[in-house]
Amino acid sequence: MIKITEKDIQRVVKMTIDNVLNEGLIKTYSTDETIRVILKTFNDDEKKNLSINKEDDKVGGYYFDFYISKNAEDFQKLIYKVGQVMNTCGYTESLKNENENLIWLRYQMKFNKLVNVKQWHYIYHATSKRHLEKIMKYGLSPRSNNSCFSYPPRVYFVYGTDNTTILQSVKNTLRNVENSRENLSNRIKNENEYVVLRIDTSKLNDNIRFYQDQDYKLGIFTYENIPPSCIEITDI
Image (cartoon, rainbow, N blue to C red; front, side, top):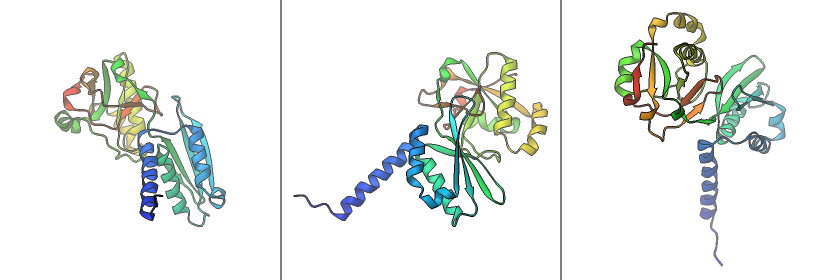
């Protein structure tokens, strides 16, 4: 008979936890699976201070809203626990707000619907002219330094079939992901500050994955770098 030691048990437990966490890094659980995990994770006292709402987004996905009472005995710990659970299930915090009584957290799918960008010859990205030299030298890198959303670093693109559609798409994407809302209207009005880049999808590595933007139908994003060899400057 083989004797199982405490070290063996700890190793198995660690492997199990790692597998669960890694799964959350590569896929998003279904709605039903996520709800089951949530119900199992939080005890009755925690559930009294936690309200959850699941909503469909505009492009066939879904998100979860959490309303956490500040009257909870340790609401900071509860916030952390929500984040851990949703990360494991493949969701990322995208919006956060609060008042004197509640904290509101929105979690969107970390891995949205995969998009085959090869169906378009070009996809488009708008950037400030002050970043152009660096982009053409090093490429486009994911970033998350905006104050409206809490996504992990991403690079956003739009697609379209004509210049009017593309330009409008670029403006809409800017409204979603560029800096703070206070400065945004003035920045969009001064279109000369921006340049529209196009990415030749035939030159992209097949391993670069793109996902549907949940907030905009013609928007897509990636978590990966886009090399300068794929990037061209347009006159849009």
